[in-house]
Image (cartoon, rainbow, N blue to C red; front, side, top):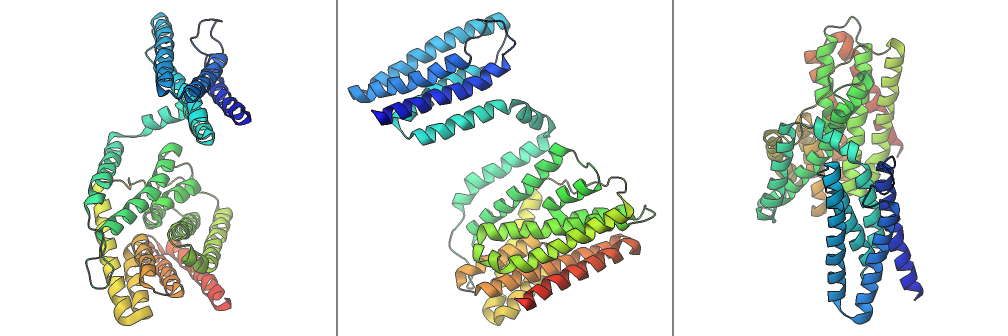
Length: 414
């Protein structure tokens, strides 16, 4: 009995929570002009729990089914009358009412904790209408189409890819490579969405930080090109340093998600280098102040062609890393990581992390990841020197050298 009281209490709370959100939206409406408010939704959750309890007591699931159908019919009929009067075509309140009834029933017939989580998620989703609608208005058809194509390729193609490795060194596993490719695209897409929501650029700092989540190399190249038309490029060099910091933190996040043991090995030197990049960037920006905005790297990570190109590069890097590690052990793995990272640090890092399954020591994998970070920094510096003036790439070179020295010093101390 005590358990049933708790379950019914949770069912009532779910209804009140959702009703609070629904009632707040229509708080200015005249009295008795709404089909459902906070009281009606609270009663709906409690009703779902009571009918589920009756169904269990009578051992008749038909009681719950009949109760749900009757409630759905009555609720929908009243909402239809309201909609006709207000010329409103939204069905959200009807669906929310049905969901509250079902969640109330789940409190008794299932796990009330799952029902409570569902109720909180439902209320949060209803309260996020403006945010979600604003996001839809910002998204373009090309972005939506790319995301849908990627989703289809993941759901349809991924199960069809062979799971075992196809090369003698254990580096080329089509299903695993594609799965990790999707993971990296999803992480990049989170940064891409942030840029789209905030606007393409809101100042030099935000532009560099948000763009670096997608590609620090592209941000550095953009800053180098923009610096050609500026009288002084110290602030652009500072923004490039902040982008490098984000790149290191991004790699640390990926390593932590995939292989925590390697993350614990690289964390201290990597974070030391990131801290130096952050300090150098902040000092450079403070000395000169912010220049006019520069566009960040806003390429959609869900575009199919670049995604397939990354998958191919990742496959080649994985196979080469496994082969070099098999033939030349640690030196071969470090060389392969450095070469791959010059083109794409993500592909290099993921290739190294996959070798943990082949009993490669964690220290060796950690050294490969740190080598990839260093090689990618050198690659960014070369692009900066190629595309930007000396007044831009010389400060970047100095910041990179200090960060590398800090990371190497930490390694030696450890």
